[in-house]
Length: 161
Image 1 (cartoon, rainbow, N blue to C red):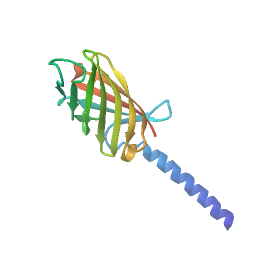
Image 2 (cartoon, rainbow, N blue to C red):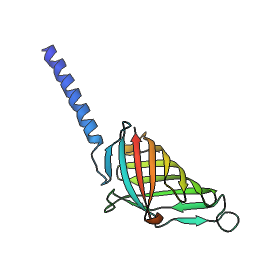
Image 3 (cartoon, rainbow, N blue to C red):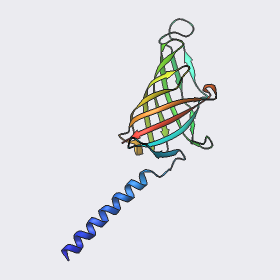
């Protein structure tokens, strides 16, 4: 009887682990989620950069210290259905070249925060600095890829939790 009880507990525990790991990959937000070769998972969303605004903080024109703010909608990897939004800011660090940015991507199951460079003329990689909900404790990196001359951006999160 005791041997049967132990075997049942072990089987139930194994089943619970399989269910929990399987649920981790379920797509509730419409975004593309795949495995990552680094042991994490990949989540891709497309930002529509429709609200970006730059505020001059010193001399007129493009100067260090200017602030770029935004709060945009994000869509699934196929760019068909809205799955959330983002909000954040960037500080101009090198005029004509780059900003240093912080922002949050808000999705149905939680939020992901990132920090890092945004370049005027090339793609970049930012650090995932945390998350909430399903993304609690997230770390990893996010590839930022420009689309349609900066009208849209692909956020490719490589999440390790």
